[in-house]
Image (cartoon, rainbow, N blue to C red; front, side, top):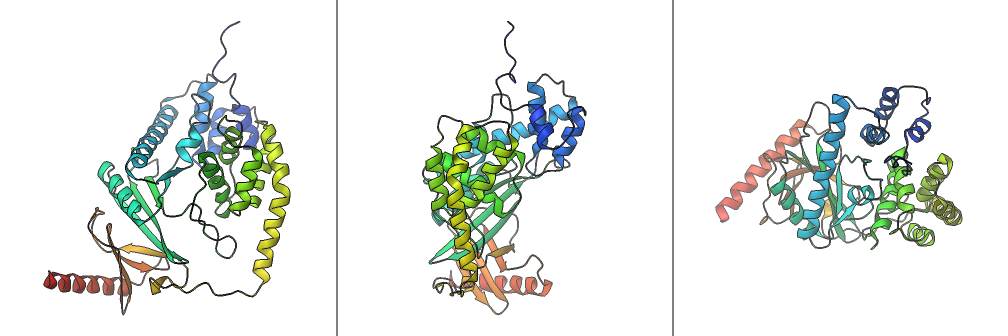
Length: 376
């Protein structure tokens, strides 16, 4: 017998995508790719890589699309390795580790790189490493209060190889494992120790932001059947501990309904989660109907008392790392300035900012620099 093709032992086939995306199997590959482009998750390179594994001949455009995504994924993997080596306690979420469970030759696309850091010192160390090794052109900074802590989201971006076709490269650094949803599930700061559990709960957490896609379903299916995956009972217990039983159950049901790829481990996981998910959903309903008790007063930074995230509007020039800069929140008549190792920002709650508020922040920043210059 002739040797098997790469797709012969792979659970991923074009027929699976035709069915998942509700495209007739008799339609040409371009129709499937067109449908994949309409969904989140950069699915087109995944479909094209599976097609190539099945022997389809790709043209110059589709070949380069796969090449560009593979280069992006490889770059994220290299950056994840660098950050993990340089920043104690940093944990990369999803992308690189989930990709390891995909069949050889199949490309798991990734639009960005997500990483957890345990504290502010680790955050700024990671920021400095990214700025040192990647051509970052834009940054976002968000801060929020949780109990007695300041939590951070720092996003760093740089241009894609083909910026007319592909989104910017993007690294997101956070000081918490899972953000939750206000009024439903609180922020959970510490990630699980096991990497597979970290990843699968991060995929489940996405349900608070968007519907699940076929890529999410494949992430669960391929990871559940891997040798390093914890037992379904351990995963169900972690979902309960992290308040994600309903979301993981929803993902498990999506895999069960897809029929392929089949997963006996998922059948067991689904059964284990049903009762836990019902209890968590009931607890959420009880919380919504109960009188709301104000959260514990914020004592470190009054601007974060509301518990709502504050987003940084950058006031300084191009992003640079200033490792010796301390983090400060400076209150003035027009709002709050954040001064940190990434520069100076006006903290705002909404996307639209009054130009007068922006100008007032610049004036305050110039005054602050002048005063500090006189003191030095």
